[in-house]
Length: 508
Image (cartoon, helix red, strand yellow):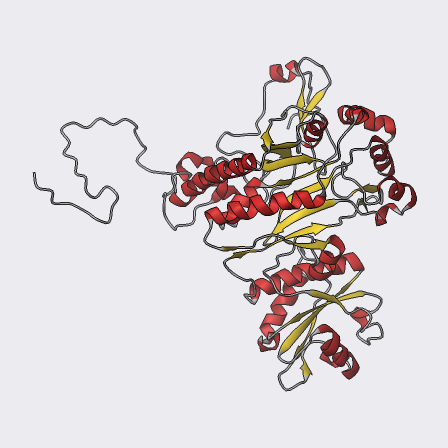
């Protein structure tokens, strides 16, 4: 029979089927809950409820296939670098690692609980004691945190790795190998090669107002407090003053400056106001608070801070830490609204020299980053320095404004470990009880060790150029941390609660 319906535009365009019998193997309802492979907007909760249909969408389907290929590439590369893949337990112990634990009641041990691991932190350090010099795994981690567009609620995966007799620089070399290698394999974008820029935490907060700066944004924050200490502008009085100079910013109309002020004073950002001025091409300062900027001030801004003609300058005034944070958010928003973000490139940097401790909301000294990190200066620093001035061998990898990995040189000395926790309010008995295995292991000759854990989900999200981490996870939870497909979390029967010796205070 001559083929009359050949279609070169279809993958199956050369195939024709003449049916002599039709058998329906899987019946489908007449009406789908939503159209698949359409540009039409579909409510996300509906898509998640019918995720098995949503995953037929070509873009989403390809994201999951991409995820599989990236995971294989990461494993292959770590194997090539001599690392050994080792799984660690999911049912573990509770550990203070920065978020709430997910607790699992024990049926066989009434009144006692496991905790799902926030990270395999103690286990990978124990593996170093055990002589596995280069460990890794694609590790599931569980943290009871509020979800964000770039953070999956409940569970996430990281490329967890650790090395014995390793320095901070040794860890950086592994990251600078594995991460660009993986990115380059799956993207047409320009991928920055190592060595990556290293930015101390304090400098990052001063220049970018955030510890995960997007280096594609050319704007920087500058402290102009000293220049304006005698300013007649009342909003600057006794405040830390941060400035952002925007080249060609004077070209923007008044509406732009009003909209930026609206953004800065929104509840999300929290500024009391956003001062600004234009430096016109003719050499005159106009608009905003220009009348409060004297000729002497203008000259200093020109000579020392880079203010030039046709630019605009924005000011944030508040107490020190709040001024940094607000200026950081304003910088990000200016970069977006003025289309200053460099396109088609992945830029990386390491944030280093994190503080070992910080003050909690209650004014208590607490760990700033990872409680198992080595303080710079060792035991002597812990004994003699102001805790809030002690730095740690802790570091983050940042890519295009996203934190993509955290790591540290680990504390392997039990004496230093006890003192570090003592400063944060833990007694030696607390350390023995909560971290007994690690404390005990450190008595038997522990090699110095260090490691890091790049976030796999966030890495895939960046490579896929997605703005939502749920788009690269097969079965994600929604913004309320609910699995709408499987209806989890859900209530259980009284018999199930009795099995694990739990009684609810009240009916919910």
